Length: 356
Image 1 (cartoon, rainbow, N blue to C red):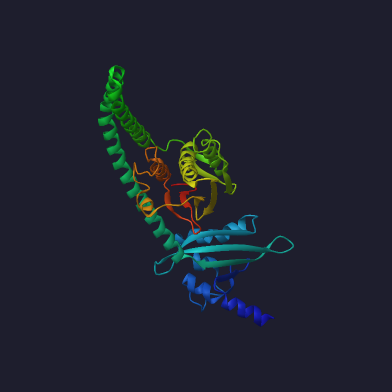
Image 2: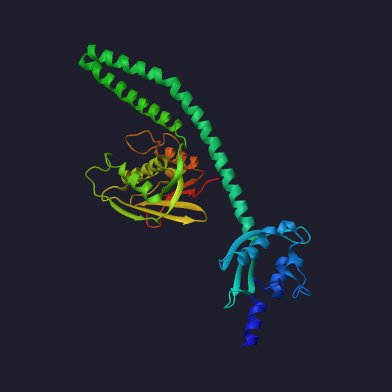
């Protein structure tokens, strides 16, 4: 049995150190020597302090063991930086467990070490890519906002004048002229709708981020649908999977984004609309997926869905997805669209649980 234990100890894929009550290193497997950059000869039997205390930059690594000794907690787990003798920096997962005898005194300290340097590097690169994508999205949004504000300012007064003169002429017009005036009035109302949509888009801003329960946000989004024509008189099948978790967000703004996505799903779902909302926590992000049983996005829709004023609906300004994406960007998140394997549209929103 001892040989089996020894074989397992020597071949474990993670480092193991066993430290005695006086700080002497009782045992260490080869992987621990490789990770820590310590020679296998002479390592066992050395004093913990003589090996690690001399390197001040490794204080976080040393403190994992100290905390296990000084605190009642029998197990301490952290990810800490660690510098090899040649200056190379690693990131280690360190678990320190204190073994105590019946008298409460420390009999041994077992330290498990795993090298996470490569994984940490991947996460850092991913974070940089997300930050860059967010910066580019922010710059694009700022350019669009400036353009939108300019357009809204330039055409608001002419539209109001056209609408006013049309109403004035309508009072004096004969039947032959009234049809043309009605057409002018209809097109003017469409322009007014677009101006309002642009004004709403340019006013979107993250103002009150706070910890809020995700269920509360989703229910607020669903509550906003009640007075919409696409919902009235229709039976909607809801399927919601959401963990009991909090997210740092502007509650009403995020609910508005989800409302836009849910409304879009219902409007395109046709008869017997069914909408599934699935939320989960993944690598520090809240990922919210919304899927429906409609026809899904066309190829053109997938390419142009986030473009302002693009719409296939007979009414509306085509700003719903654009507004939702802007709100998600304000939360340092991202949004993607696609079609499900069994048909229907699928939109995925990803925002950090606790943004920087």
